[in-house]
Image 1 (cartoon, rainbow, N blue to C red):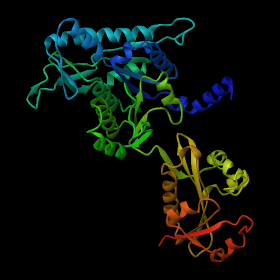
Image 2 (image 1 turned 90 degrees about the vertical axis):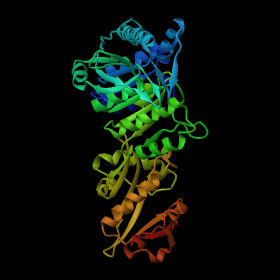
Image 3 (image 1 turned 180 degrees about the horizontal axis):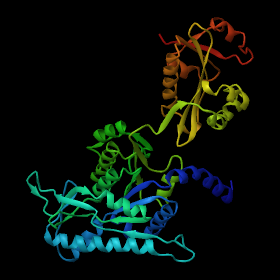
Image 4 (image 1 turned 180 degrees about the vertical axis):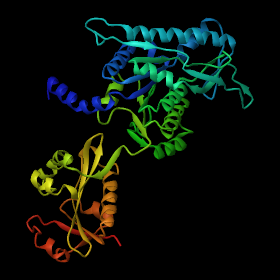
Length: 439
């Protein structure tokens, strides 16, 4: 596939995500490392692109390396406890100056409209303010955190007013108390609190690592909320403090109304766009609900099912079905959907009045096999069969006998098929007959 065809293919496949994201609120957090990186203008251009596509953006930036450099320049020492800086008054002065400088730099880049650049013609408005009220962390385990604080309240109505005006909100990791004190906050905590209060559709945490990985360094693509909790408990002793905090915040956000949190390696150029506009992204997504949805099929799913089963019909795994036949039988189908794309299907046909049914046309997209989806689809089909009063489910297969046996099916004889199904049996295909009792 040449570059032009690849571009057209990608652009067409990104269209559902462009439509889905328009009008949604995203809270995006990144550290000061991103700002000091020479590739930071690329990230800013990607943020501007999201804005141009109608996404409502709240950006929360960190400033840790810049603050540390400022403290060193003034000969001040700094101390961390549980991943948080203990901020005394001289350090707080450096925090204020540095955070302001970083925010101005972000605003300046977003305001650029240079010709022949991704920002050409952009008319972006930004705003910032005291949207976050804070309180001191106080003394913990005998340690006084001084001017290090935690989020007390988020002024969500004010933020929403500015978002409604088409402005990008830029928030520094500083909070204000009702008495006028200022506190140094953890940027990821600020972003999480804002996402929860805004009921954002996404919290995007751009991290300075590979993100969440399994043994062998492969990135974990998705975790349900329960799976994320188990991962957090299992990995606490082995994870770096930053990784642990990001996962903790992701879980906290999803437990409190944020639909999805995504942890993305910030160092990958274009990673934010890849995560948001491709089916599987490049980071880890934590969601309160299952990302894959299994449901009854509708007439709108016919095209997706035909595309899914075509390769399996070509290689003889499945019997060919015409569009007309599929349309006529669509109410018998279940589909597994992922972001609007059919990635799995199965059909249940009643065979007689004795409670016998046939499970047919079981298929999972080749990119999504070996991840338990087939088992979930099978469980859904069995629940559906039971709800229709089925006592036995038959299946005929040429290539997946062992998988069905692992799911509790037993090999049976063609002669034991219900009569109306036996007369249709294709002896040339020589399919194995399996049966499972649901009683």
